Image (cartoon, rainbow, N blue to C red; front, side, top):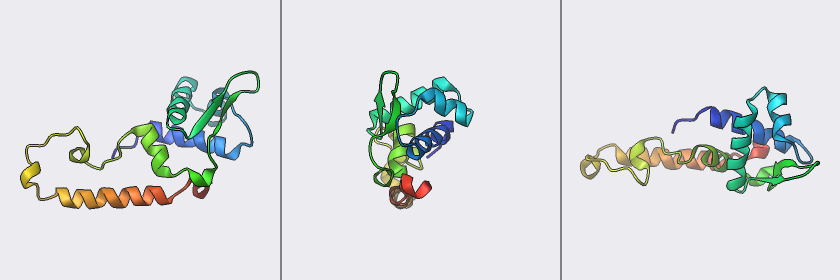
Length: 129
């Protein structure tokens, strides 16, 4: 698992939405957090596609959380922004490893992956607020 600026900026954006009582524009989030507007828009679109954020067009439009903060886990947010959160590439679905049949470490990585997912699932956006 390699977290990038996508995770950092995306988490800042979704926290801004969680703190707001209504719709917030991507421009407002970008300005308030000193983030690149184009990047914020792309991140909010990813979060929309994942069902974590909803968008509204028009003068009062913008973005808002699609669910209450306590119903959104860190795992969902990071997966929406980064994709697969596997700690090693051999745990991804499309990876083909020559060592997979006799691999001595795969079981350990599977356990680490499970614990990581459990931990991220147990932390809600409300907990971060």
